[in-house]
Image 1 (cartoon, rainbow, N blue to C red):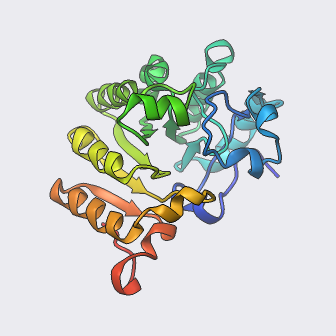
Image 2: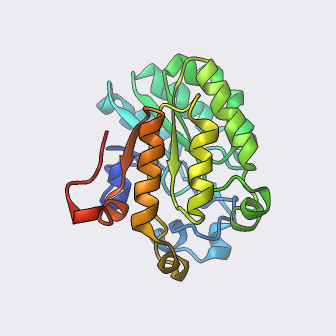
Length: 246
């Protein structure tokens, strides 16, 4: 099995192809599902390292995916802190461009990622950020070592100004009110939103998901934004009809 793979389940709703460049992540998000997925303890996961021979493998496999889009990344962040030392993501962007593969980036790295904006433009990458909070104290609690919300907003602005397509992952939703506020604050420079719920957490039972679904689709439609409601949230649609997708 290659390092470039087809995601399954909920991950498939984000991109048809993906590659994970690191094992683990240093952002320390307490809601992260990835440690369980890759069978690591939280302590092990918080000590990330580059995947073995990852650049060799990406170089070898990329020609088979010419003309397609590959997400960086699902079980790690392409712009976590050790990227500054290893620059694996930067090298992968060059490899992708050489083989006509487009990168779909998803990061909480904020302005750390913008140092590669030149390569993203050359690659015609799709730049995305995970946004969960507006309140900095909430972000510091749930995502202690990730870039703060305003820095992620600024990175999206830079990417949009550079001519890149931009997107936001509104998942997990921990504070519905803050998620709605994120749309109000970012709609001018974000092209597409993908919205999911909070899973595998008892706090999810306290949220009125049907109300949130109505509220978030209303504001997304107000700003005429492209959006995708993930299946786990779409099942709360009134009447349980076909999920709302625009």
